[in-house]
Image (cartoon, rainbow, N blue to C red; front, side):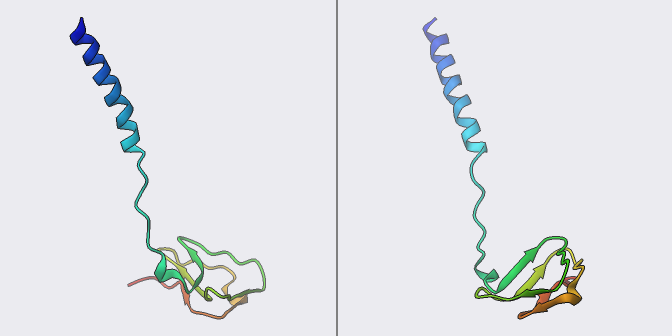
Length: 87
């Protein structure tokens, strides 16, 4: 009987530890090289009117892997637009 109690206790401790390990935080991403970007996107940047993109952080616009930027013609940009397909 003592062996079963010890086994159940160890099993309970193991079950409580496993979820904690699987929910561990993801490693952080160094965003230091993105300091000149005012806009970063993954698939699409949508502009619905006359827009000025600039600022203290920079005025670059970047998107990867997408390339769709509706309304780009109406944007005044103080930086570079990195929205072309990457080779």
